[in-house]
Each structure stands twice: as structure tokens, then as C-alpha cells.
Image (cartoon, one colour):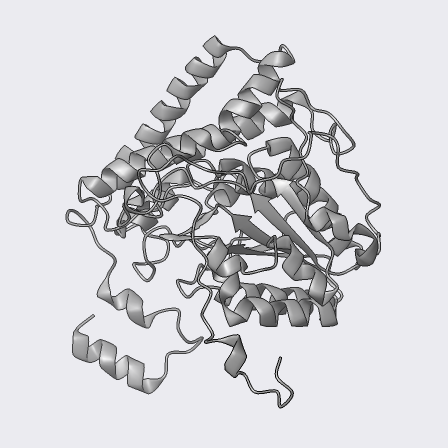
Amino acid sequence: MSDDGSPGEFGPLSLHVPEPAVRPGGAPDFSNVELDEAGAIRRPDVDANPEDIRDLAFSIIRVLNRDGEAVGPWAGLLTDDQLIEGLRHMMTLRAFDARMQIAQRQGKTSFYMQHLGEEAVSCAFRKALAPGDMNFPTYRQAGLLIADDYPMVEMMCQIYSNERDPLKGRQLPIMYSSKEHGFFSISGNLATQYIQAVGWAMASAIKHDTKIAAGWIGDGSTAESDFHASLVFASTYKAPIVLNIVNNQWAISTFQGIARGGSGTFAARGLGFGIPALRVDGNDYLAVFAVAKWAIERARRNLGPTLIEYVTYRAGAHSTSDDPSAYRPKTESDAWPLGDPVIRLKNHLIGRNVWSDDRHKQTEAEILDTVVAAQKEAESFGTLHAGGKPSARDMFEGVYEEMPPHLRRQRQQAGV
């Protein structure tokens, strides 16, 4: 360095742009996913000080080992019957996805988004919640509804935007809403739901209620300013909320390194705000439930927010408008080290002698019959280009408690 501090001897600056480890045509590379042994990560007390559990933001909590056995301090929270129910929920979501994907290709709906490979995250989390708790989801948490027995016919009618659409054609397909099932209206604006979730949780605390909130966001959307503002408010006011980050490795066509930056893990984002943060194997139904239960209890005991990163993989396309072969190797999903959540839970139950391959195949057939029957019923009320549609009158309803004069005039002019 020169005595006068001039920059000349250092040369020009250059901008760093993160690059994915591999491009289409290359060999899949998940060397950045460092796996801890199943059962190896400690389970702290629910009231643990965030500073004492910083290491959990850099490890991955796992329950199911390579042999399909449930091991370690996070195991043993679910009965065999509850696990079978969880398996059925994931299988139902997968069958539902497959049928709706085909329906989109047939022109019966304009748009659809699958959950392939991520079913354990939302299905297991839903079972850890209590009635009245509220989720503020993204477009890939339909498992919250499936696992809460929300009618598939209503979900499909919303996708088809037909005359029985519970949202009356006001939302993009797959953007469900159900107050009764704790599923807040989905927003297409990225990260908006995180601020809403924290605000709802703060309101619950102000009212001295017992209900908590759960915010959901994808890895890519953590780059939005709303995400960081949410963490400020959640940590400052100790909002009773679980802040979920679903890290499925890809934000549409952009790999996770763009949004993650130099933080190492997405969970580590919480540490700077004094929020306890954990990473969990998102393809392990048992681990997801156990970590969700821990965080939910923490919120319920008025101990403040918890941030959870679910390490999973988006096996399918981002949506029906996306072609993932343009930005990642076609064989990448096969190389994903955490496997398939459905197969892993199936193998665990077989190992416990409460399930079998034959029973699994029979259940698949039964679930498919149920989904197909629901689809036929939904389509009897119309699809995108055929059958009944919501009434134009509906656009004037449900906006104000009492319709103002200008809307009454507009409705009269429209003749509805």
C-alpha cells in the first residue's frame, strides 16, 4: 500500500457473481450439502437461550437413518398410526399434483405448481399445529390443507376457477384460502406473507390469545426486504411465530447461492436478529414434525419466534410454465442425497412391520381413485374453458361490509 493511500497499486475492482456448481449437461454436485449422522444432533430444552444453540443453524437435524430406523433425541414423538396417516397425506398430495398437472396440460386450468419431493414439509408441520393457529403460506404448501382434511373438490374448483370456486375467481389457480383451516390467502408478491404473519402473531399476543402464526417463504424470497423487516419485528416484539424457510435449492431458475449470499445457511440469517434457528432434513417426516413441535411449543410458551430452514429439493419444475432442464442437469433429482420423503417413510414403516409393499400399492390405487372421483366432481361444475364460471356479480361482493353507493351504481351499470 502506498504512503498516500492511493488505490492505484491495487488494480481495478471486480463484481462477484455467484455461480452454480454445475450446469445442464454436467454431473450433479451436492457436495455443499453436509449431512450429519441421523440422531447425532442434540435436542435442546424448549426455553434454550438462542446464543447457546447457534450450532443448530449450521447442522441438519435428521431422525431416519440409512436403514430407515428412527434414532436420536428427536425420535419417538409419533405413533405408528400417526405415521401411516402422514404417509397417506403425502401420497394424496402427490396424486393430487399429478392429476392437476395433467389437467393443466389438457387446458382445463391455466396454471399449476407441484410439490414433488417437498411433501413432508407441509404435511408434517400441519400435524404439529393446533386448531386456530394460522399459516401464511407460499404457493407450495398445499399439504397444510391436505393434512387438515380440506376437501379436495374445493381445491380443484379453485384451480379450475369454476362456478363452485370458493374464492369466486379472484385468485390465481393454487392460491387457496381458508380461515377455518388456518390457511391465510396466498399473495403472489414474494415475501409479503412474512410481514403479515408476524403482524398476525403480534396481534394474537396483544389480545392475550393462545394462537400462534407460521410464516412460510422460499429460499429465493429471503432476498426480499420484507423478509428482513419481518425478522426485525419478530425478534423485537418476541412474536409467537414459527418462521419457516423452505430451501428447495432452486428459486425458479436461479440457484440458492444468489439469495443466500455469504451467510453459509439460510437458518443463519436468524442469528443476527437473536432468533433461535435450526436446520432440518426436509425429506424426513419424523424430523420435520419433531422440529416443528419444538418451535411451536416455544411460541406457545411466549418465548418468541423460531426460524427453521427445511433442507429439501424441488424435484419437479417450478411451475407448469417452467422447463428445469434449461438450468440444471436432468439427473440432478436422482442424485439428491436426502432421497424421497414418501419412500423414506414407507421404508421406515415396513421396517416396523406395520406396512408392506403390497399395502403401499393398494393404498396408492385407493388414493388415486379418491382423487379421480374428486376431479370428476369438480369438473362437473366447470373448467377454465368449459362449464360454469363465477358470476360477474361476485366481484362486487365481500369488499365492504356495506356496499358503498359507487359500487352499487357500477353493479347496476354492469347489469349483474
